[in-house]
Each structure stands twice: as structure tokens, then as C-alpha cells.
Image 1 (cartoon, helix red, strand yellow):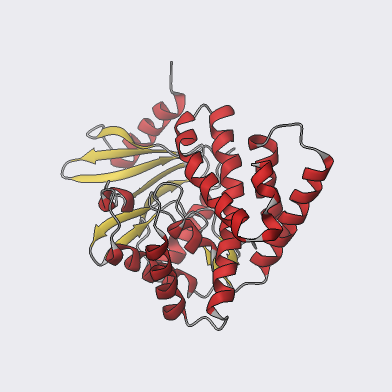
Image 2 (cartoon, helix red, strand yellow; image 1 turned 45 degrees about the vertical axis):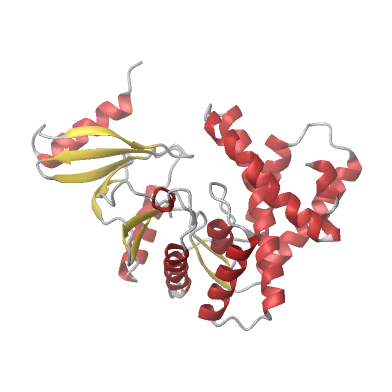
Length: 311
């Protein structure tokens, strides 16, 4: 089947390099409409991003990439960009993700490095940067994905009302916590291992201003790698102490857990949608862990007990 956008990307690269002396190969899949290709030329490699303009906002990607790099966060440097056609040529941060580097085993130092970088991200001054707020409308729309794609269509009116109450609690929790720059998908597949002192950060184009616990949830309650309770508590204390959070630790933990529930309800809907709408069935394999996270909170807090029945 012809791939017109790949043909156009090849033409764009030929025009940029001034010749055809490069090899293009698939670099990675993405849950969005973006595609990534590795470009080999002489002794150098690059990453080419194909981001269809009708579906993806590449100007936001450029904005956040510049913001991160200007604040000493290792995001891919932009080599060339064509926002009209949705093609970007980027620095290649390699192919070793945080998840690959773990090799299936917990690594305290690696997680602490990821937390250190997250704290740096949260310290960035966003006063003069035009970023959307992670407001109640967006938070609610995200959780609506659970109803639209994951749950059976025949929810009772009682169940629907209970879900609305739960959504309200989770939204209030998010808005009432510290507001910082939020990557919005800060997990083990979006961090690239550069060396023992540095991680590259990718997939940041949906960044917003929101809760200081959101990205921490993405990292420590990852859909692709599970921590045990001892590991989780150690890292939560590490983040809490290094961030100088004024909230009591017990309150901070509850904020973290409720923020995680909001994210996991959203992800259940997203993973099911990726399968049904987009034919990306591999995400179904990750649903059991995400559901487990949600049920843990439903079992811990009485106000969410109805989720055990609904899920």
C-alpha cells in the first residue's frame, strides 16, 4: 500500500541534505498519529518525525523542546522543521529507553535520576510561556474516555451519578495541589538513557500547567513497569524531601494517589480506544496493571468503593 507521507518525507530530507545519501528506517511506534524514523547518513544519525498537521500540533513540540533545552533538560535538539507539512528533523537520543535500561529489575539510582530531572522540570519558570492549564474541563474530558471506550454502554443512572461524583473529587484534588509545568506522559518509554548522569526527555508536546504529582504518578505508577510498595514509598519520600513540599506527607500521599486514579481511569479509556479505533491492539496487554492501580485506590478510600463494581 503506497505511503504518500513517507514518500514526501523522503523528498523533504533529500532537499535538506542536498542528495539521496541517507538510509531511512522505522525508529518507534507512537500512541498518537506521529511516526518516527531513524536517518543514517555518513557517520551520523538523526530522528525524523512525521506529524500530520491535521492531527498533530508540531509548533507546540518546538515550543516545549526549546523551553526544556534552555533549562538544561536534555530534549532532542531541533535541526530542521517544516510545520506546514509536519516534518521535523531531530537530534537522535539513541534507542535505549529507561524501560530498556531497567532490564526488568528495579534500579534505585535510575529512578532517583528521573526524579531529579522531574524536579528540575517543575522548577522551570513558565510565567511568560503560553501553556494551557490542566483545568477541570480537560481533566473531566480525559476521564470521560473511561465511559466512552472502556465501560459497558449500559451503565445505570446510579453508576453514572457515582462516576460524576468521583470525577469531581479527582478534579478538585488536582486543582488544589501545587501547580507546575507538567510533561503529561513522563514514564519509562519517554525517557531515553544517555548515561548514568543524564536522561533524554521525549514526547512532551502535550505539556500543560497542572498538579505537581501528575508526572510523578506517570513515573512511579507506570503502565509498563510496576514498583512494589517499599520501592514506591522510598521514591515518594525522596521526591517529597527534595521538592521541599510544604504539605504534610500524609496529605501529599493522598494527593498523589488520587492524581494517579485520575490518570489511570483516563488510560483505561485510551488503551481501549487505541485498540478499537486505531487497531493498536498491543496496548490491551497493559490494561491489567492499570486496572490494578485503580482498584488499589478504590479499595483504600471508601469514597471510591463503587469503582470496584463498575470496573
